[in-house]
Image 1 (spheres, rainbow, N blue to C red):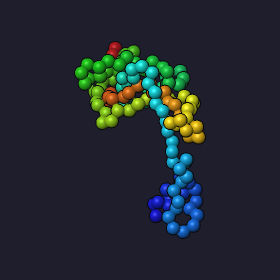
Image 2: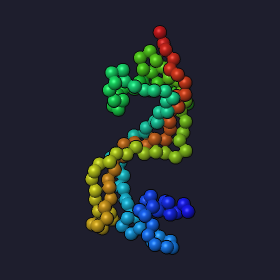
Image 3: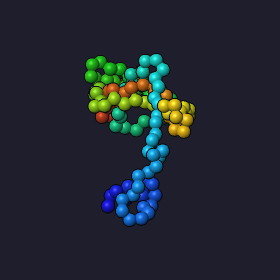
Image 4: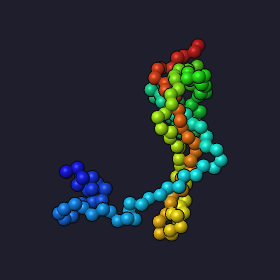
Length: 138
């Protein structure tokens, strides 16, 4: 019975016969507050079908990946003599890039329940798809 397995994974072993009692109300309530400061940035998701590594082995986060240019639905990503060619595609549902702030505030004035505050960096409505190997310019 799938329900028992899911229950066990979420709330521990099933005790007793019959259907399990629902979790306490406090366990079912969770709130997250998302805040934009100013107008949200328009972001583009990159889908690259290759490995992206730094030559010196440093982490990729925060590094310059290349120059992204879009003309209509055609998009290029250029890094030195290497160029990736791709296309832009709309996402069926927009995504929001969020970051945990570690801050909390009372949920709707209730001091017992908390809302976690998340910082929203921008909205992703399109993605750039690169499904070919880079071309080398000499």
